[in-house]
Amino acid sequence: MSRLDKYRRSHGQPSRPDAQSMRNKERRQTHIATEAARRIQSIVGSNDAGELSRRPNPEDLYAAKMQAVAVLGLAVKPGELPPDELVMECFSKLAKNPDAPALEPVPVVAEIPPTALPTDAELAGKPFIKDRFEFYLSLLRPLELVKQHPKAHPEGDALFHSLQVFKGVFQTNPYDEEILTAALLHDIGKGLEPGGDHHSATMRAVQGRITERTFHLIDRLADAHDYRSGTLGHRGRRALENDTDFDSILLLAESDHNGRKPGANVPSLEAAIEIIKALALEDDSEI
Image (tube, rainbow, N blue to C red; front, top):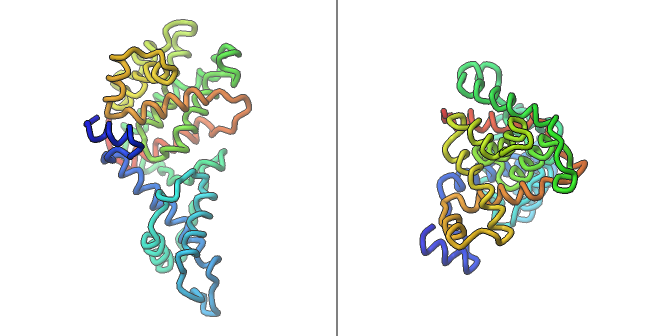
């Protein structure tokens, strides 16, 4: 972290966005803008010819965007909403292709935004993605049988906890494949070495099967918990604060800490995997 970024952080100013965060923001805004564009006609009204009765004003567009946010189940600040121009651009594209299918929600959890899931043909063309996710599933499914200490984990089994962590990360950063993968896989060691050093077991299992950044996010999770509780030493705090993924590591730790709610509404394991798989296909980045 540069001195300028540290100054911005200490004075409540945002750090310079990196390429990944900018890309995530653009995806998020396009997603909201597309959904908002589908709602303009119902807000403005139409004439007998099916055309808009008038041009949408800023209030109309704001209402459409807020409806889209509600439908997609996102939590956004006013400054994170897409610009009016982007909404109208999406509206023009939809007007040229009125038969375009509406986005369908991801199964099981309504709060998770719609995702363009990959087809079997797409997966067949990307065998490395298919094999990778089958490996993830083989490590995650046994967690359903791992019962945790009821005082530390009143939510129940380790898979239910992992899905809560995934959902917590998703609600803040739904377009970052690597942190979503870290959220799902961070506790797989509990199924490999029950009662043992599950962190070391996790890191051995995923070595070479996930990206370096995903590996790093999981590896720094314990330090992030100590950081949040104030028990991390001075050198450790400074090293973590200087980490280029500091914000993502803290988000993962916060979601891990909060993912302990009995009866919480979570996606199925298959739905969570499909979300990450779709992002992997979109990025077309082989491990």
